[in-house]
Image 1 (cartoon, rainbow, N blue to C red):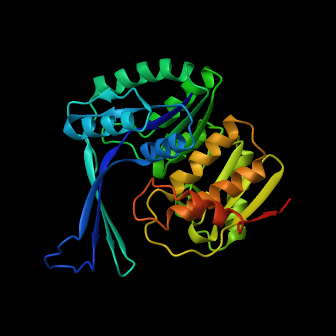
Image 2 (cartoon, helix red, strand yellow):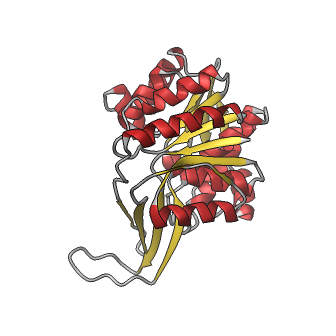
Length: 309
């Protein structure tokens, strides 16, 4: 069983428009409501590949019920802590001229009792799980070291934990030494406290984090693929060029494939290649979490893996 954690889930309202014009009335061509949040997106991918998943985090109100129902329909278990306030809604506007505009709500304020209730439940869920994935931002009211506390619980249970977050929560999580982290380049710059002007600087920063006790550091770089430092090895994985329609969920595809590969002890180079192929295929679709299987196979054949050491 894989445990996914989404502390700030959302209903993602994905809309299409011919062109988004600032300061004017914009009429949408189509809108869809989807269960969202990074951990929820990871859950979608895991279920696509028939993995058993238990999803946890915070849910509240009608939006919370909508997400819970969506998880049930995809065959995932749901073990969320209820909140008194409504789960947020995010708006993702995709225009036909190639621009994607995201409007993200901050999320509901989490009370002290809700924080305590979640950690109590999380402790039990970790003990029932093989591997844990913590993804995304934290809702207001949660301390910046909340992820670090969760990682410590995973360590106590002897379980591997993978983290995909940003900002101060990521910095504090790194101090707790999760098994794997997956920042993108901008998130890595925040952790480093400086601009990283070249891939060499990205690699050196990833190495520094590896030396601080992170087993695997994966840095995603959009259309340029990813850099991975694992054990004594360094990998550079590059996808072919594809037409980008929607980048939402691409990083979640990477962390989901990494989770499956680590859980099942798959050859790591193949895992990285699959992760980049799925991420690249994801950007060719309008709906996040929708996996075009044939496109994944097509792209996989063209992904290049360079072993740098």
